[in-house]
Each structure stands twice: as structure tokens, then as C-alpha cells.
Length: 459
Ligand code: GAP
Image 1: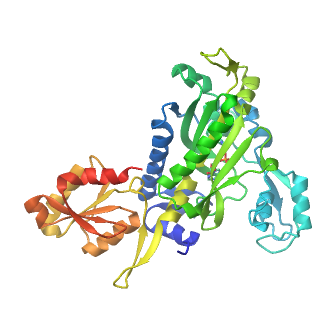
Image 2: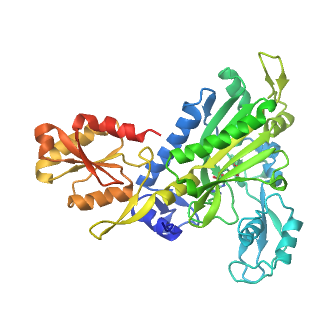
Image 3: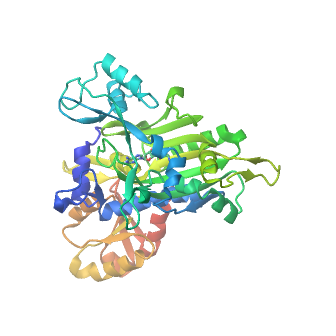
């Protein structure tokens, strides 16, 4: 099936209340996005799914919600102040601004990512291969400059440099600085993990592709602390676990692949890194990064803060700095993958067409739409039903237009089940329940509906 284009997806999201342009009535603010009523539900369900599988169902993973604003020394220790930067290159001819590594990646169709390359190596490659500016087609670039991605802000009332702090560039650092707090308060034993969902900010040079690369986005990060002798075992475990999670949410296998980082791409402290990539409308791109970060993070915070972040194994008396395996995924990127995968345009038997968002029932914004067949006769019972069911599941109610039109409205919202309240409901307490994907209908007792849908939500 042909892939939906990004333009179509963007318009679809706007029309049906998934995602709007940020600050739209003021002409917008470039590359900012507001999640609408359906988008908010879907996004919350994505976060719920991750939390369930990575925190709730894990006997040894604990949740955290750390502050966005942190002591600026954290970002010095983590290395972000010195080296959290992208290689910025300008086209001298049309003044367009590019990431030099992305020019290389696009030129080589992803065979080379430019990750970990020095500025000299990137410049040399661009020159030798006569890579041109994607905007104007000329090959006349400035030297590369490093551009730090941390967002700066000021804390307090005086405007001097002492008050400079940063919006966090990743949620992970909030986890590392709380390693001992969580370990002690939960009496956690290695191996154990800390999971967190929250906003992160990066002053990206080239944001774009809808919600794929933004300056404000959300991350779902797990830092899994382990004995160094078990590094490979846990890296392989989480690498597979993340892929299985994506498939269980219904993402098509052919749109997912692993990309193991080559040795020269790895950051100096990482022993292994794998990206799970998704085949977006604009091509394959990183969805999830799984990194073996060794003891770098805890080690550097020990050095800079003097805190004791070592672990004493109560069984062996061994004292060591734990290693970390980190699966880190962006909520917005997963959102984009899920809607790209779920969007379908179908031609029906009668020749008409329909648009459908075939989202997994767990993720769908509404689980059930309650539809009175004839407003005059059935709306009272339908409203009663809505109020009962919505105590257990997110429901919607629609009494406007013919039943066919109402089904179409639910198809675009991704509602997996519609129930019709008719005379049979009034007389026998039964409803017809219509499946979004097959469009088939079966009859159920009203009392069975909630459990029927809950069963389908399992993943
Ligand atoms: N703590 C590790 C870390 O932050 P990363 O690869 O820079 O690693 C992890 O980010 C994930 O966050 C990415 O795989 C991606 O899903 C998401 N992400 C990163 N930058 C993003 C951006 N500018 N916009 C949207 N999502 C982003």
C-alpha cells in the first residue's frame, strides 16, 4: 500500500483534532505543535502503554518525575555544555542552514550518518563528493561551526550570567542525579531501572518533518542499572524488548528495523548502541535509541558532585559503579510512527471510500462510540449508556446525521467500536457493536460491552 504523505497526515491531524500548528492565530511559531483533543488522548495512551510495559510490569523498575530545571553543573558534568552540539553549515549562496551530518546522510542514502565524524572529516566528504545545497543546488558552503543545542534561560530576578540555567536536553540526567535516592528509598537491588516520561528541549538547527524533529518534545526513558559483567545480556534484552513492544502496539514489521551503530559512530563511552528505525513518510529515521552507556553517567556525576553513587552488592560485598543500558524513545516520534502506520484510505464494496485510523484499541482516543439509531426514540437510553460506560472506558457520543456518516466520523478518530442503541436495546438490553476495521457487526448484551472491549485492548 502507498505510504501516506507528510502533508496529508499534517492536514488530517489538523482537520480531525489530533495536532494543530502552535500559536496559529498569531501566524504560528515555526515547528511548534499543539496536540488537540484526539491527539492528547492518543499521546496519553502512548505514555500509558510505555509506563505499563516498562514500569508497572517490571518487578525492578521504579518511576520518577524529576524537575525540568536543574542545577547547571549537571549539564557541565554530563558533557552537554561542552559537546551537545550539531555541526552547522550554511550555504553561502542561498543562506540556507543545514546540519552537515544530515547532508552526508541524505547524500549516501543513509549508508553514512556522519555521526561521530570530526568537522574536518565532514567538510572533506562534502567537498570531495561535491554535495550540493538541497535548497538551491549550489555547492558553496561556509566552514562548519559547532552549535550547542541546550536552551538557555535565566532563573530569578537579576539578569546576569550567574543565573543562567538550561531547559533539560534529555530526561535522563534527572534519573542519574536521583540514582542514590531511588536505590536507597526503594531498597532497590542491582539490576534495577528508573523510568521517566517528560519534556525535553533542544535548539535544533533543522527541526521539521512535522513532529519528527522538534525543539520541544517528550521522551520516555529508562535507565537500567546493572553489574558491568552483565552488560551484553541486558543490552540484548532491552533491544529486543523495545522491538517487541512496538510490534505489540500494531506497528508493521516491514516498517521497523534495527540499525546498529558502527564502531566509529559510537560516543567514546558507549560500548554498543542500536537505533530502532521506522519507515516514516520522509524515509527511514530513528525512532528509539538503545545505548550501553557503561558507567559514564554515574562516574561523571561522582567526579563533579563528589556524591557517592557507587553500589555495594549486599551478597558479594562488591562495590562498583553500575553500568547503564538506556532505551530512550520520543513520544512524538512514536506518535508519528503510529499514525503513519494506522492511516488507511479504503475503497468499499459500493465504490465509496473511507479514511480510517486503524489504531490498536489500547491507543485509540475513544474506545467506544455510543450512537442512538433514532435520536427521538433512543437518545435517552444512549445517553444513559454513555454515562455508564464512560466510567470505565473513554467513550464518545454522537447523535447527529445518518448512521453511515457517524461511522465515518469514528473511523477517522480511530474508534475501534461503535454501539448502536435501538429498539432492541430498549426491549432486550442488546446492542449491535461494529468493528472499525472489518465493519462487521455482532449483537451483545449491553452488560457485556465493557468487558468485550477491555479484552480487545490487551497487548
Ligand atoms: N538520553 C539519550 C537521548 O536523549 P537521543 O537519541 O538524543 O538520546 C532519544 O534521544 C530519543 O528522543 C530519540 O530516539 C527520539 O525518539 C527522541 N528525540 C530526540 N530528539 C528529538 C527531537 N528533536 N524531536 C523529537 N524527538 C526527538
